[in-house]
Image (cartoon, rainbow, N blue to C red):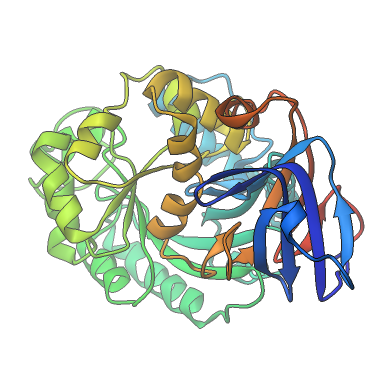
Length: 401
């Protein structure tokens, strides 16, 4: 990692604070945290190392609420969900630990290059892979160890052992661990209950397709021959009975849920929804009902999902799709990739970004525009990221660790 002085100052033509832009702004970083930010002409720089970033916008680092970094580099042309899943299963079985680690690092670098500084990530490896996930990372990573027994009693013991092993791994540096019971149709009730009792954050794929809900409710449809007896309950009922719907749980996709029916319940329980616009577009799904979820008080944040179901592994790609398809303002999109995403994940690293007292995680984006037009250009990824800092440590441009 690059070294950093204990205190320094960053100057840029635009600096995005929690309440908007500072023209010709500055950020003072002390011991990795933001000590001050505001107009550059109001700060005394005596004794500080000054880095003048010039004609760019300094923006908080993006927070990616859902990713599968281990699938980076997996190539498939499948745009139908069931064949796509089969392709992913085959790809995972064909790769060894070294290939998985290489793919993960490539995904990490792709996110960093787009201005991301924190990412949730699903660790879908076997039990032996839990340890390598805890190796030093450049990104801040909230690693959700995936639990999946296919509702098969013969696999339960192994998955419980995986759960215990993941909870025993020490958290350190830029890495935190959590749990991801895969989905209500693929995880048995005992494994769901064990995850709910583990005392850590949970992330669950939930109702991504109508086929999942059909099998859960009726035991029919495309999943009938792949799974045992149906519980004859909806996805939220399965999760609720197991205790998984607790404050801080994030549900990924939720495409087959009904905001009018399910939203008030999720809002009351403090459960957030993660929407992945790139994957949504990849599979050609119906428009995501963001306004309906918000009307029920449900927090919705953004994730990239995997490079195997997306055109780009870049938070700015998700932001551009959100601007165009969800019809939300640039400032709202920044929140969905910033403070709101961090809060949905439980602020595993405390406050990060560009606010006094936060860990100084930020990125400099090239732009010649002003105001919200500049923010939209940043979010669309039209121009490159010039540099980034995590806890005040320069992370881009890339260099030797």
